[in-house]
Length: 167
Image: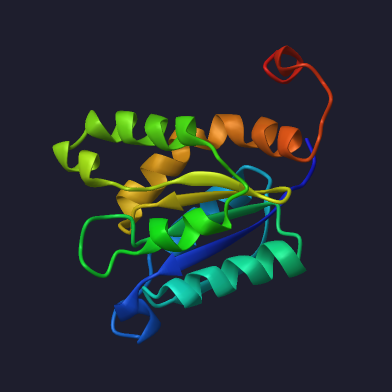
């Protein structure tokens, strides 16, 4: 399996102001490293559409990051704008991944139905938006981890049959 390069974006007003320690971003980095990904970048931005889009454009359009995972801003609070920031960046949406995360989360809490997380493709990169709490973020990433290598390979044009990746 190729060593895909990823970046983790924490979206939090309080985190960006230094008023709250980010635990979800580092936990996601650890999970990705344990799966063989290279974590090239990790940062915190406020819940602002321009800041979210700016980080993702930099990482994907200029640095060619293969996988961008964000944490935070996917709920229903007035400041939660991650889906609104990320959807315009997508060339294609991958709803099955977001649906799988919500479905698994619903087995743990009814609040999972409030998640507005989205997954999509920009250029040859996959973007996954996760909830802001460490527990929810890591549980949701764990749901899609088994499919990530295959998804990124296909996004990059791997011509192999899907069954070959699942053998």
